[in-house]
Length: 484
Image 1 (cartoon, rainbow, N blue to C red):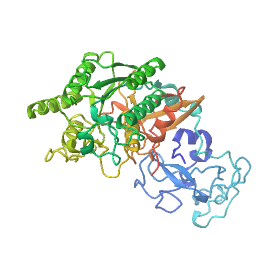
Image 2: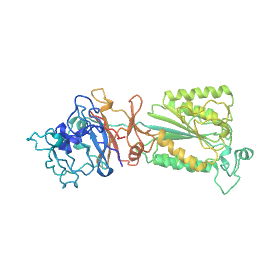
Image 3: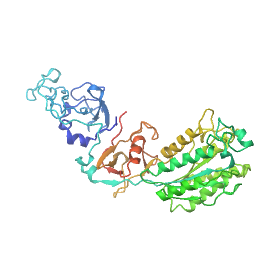
Image 4: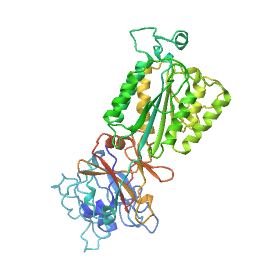
């Protein structure tokens, strides 16, 4: 179920009970129903939370402007409740069927001045059309002019990805358990010709990934560089396929280039990655937005093995993040003895698995900052596709530039994100209850500096799956937040 919360303006538009006297509303969830209790704030004015409805369905509830308690819970398919007597306790909302039910009983006759604590019940109102929490909200009908008129287009942050792929001779081998790394090092050919090689698995995984990327709204730019390029230690100064928008002809070029590869030679990771940084930097004007190098290798550096060279390279990987170039590292079977170096690249490149991952280099086979596909029991084909998919989801998320206003100043607490699909506007709630990469997150989040907005989980997937969908910001009204 979508965890949308209704804005106060929608409440005013659809439910007259929301604008009735304070005595008719519910107090804070922990307080008893009834009259006001002094000036103590029982909730944050304007705050919107989820409340419980009959049958277990969630409703929406807003804190009054004076903070004295929450307004009535708006429930799915619930009729508008009857008004209560002056000073009396609030009547239960009508629970009849939408559009025809009789409302619940109210308080005493408002002219009789009867004490609310024992007031006789009056007649409730007629049931309304109800609140459809599971449906999209037609935000175009909101009465608040600040929400409907001050609307700006949300511009996506462009994504540029250069896949840097190892084509060395060891990629000819079967992955474990069919063929061990030690067996492959002795003789880099398939042990079992009937089973796919590491390269064949990589080819299929990358082809599938390129096809997925082509379906994403806000088409990314993608390129491909293969190392080595001379069956020894050479590396390309420019990609084999330049980084361009992933049109159908460009997709075909990527796939044809991969299919023409015959794995052979050594592993110049340092030279190839440095060349990738140089290419992206030199073409930064043509590649605005986020820039990502995805390095996939089945081993460590075998061409420039000097410690000073590695240290210099790691420094440059870190410096690349300053100009918006991050480096993802995928370690294929065969790289288990080089976990330390690969983890250091991922950590320096800004894509470490966590801030506490091991990039100490204490031993060559110790490190867990990169995407390691060499652990015991792992199936390379499954792990490769999983990790390639996660790179799309986590590193190429639905990222938008923050809204700008003609007035110049944006209140981050008065920004709402609206996704338009099929002519219907859907308000996406601000959700900080889960990490943005968590599928349970159905909303959006700010970055730390409020310069970017990220659509998360199912909200991101919904946008990606509809090429005609668009995103906009509505400014000036309190941000709608996801319930707990």
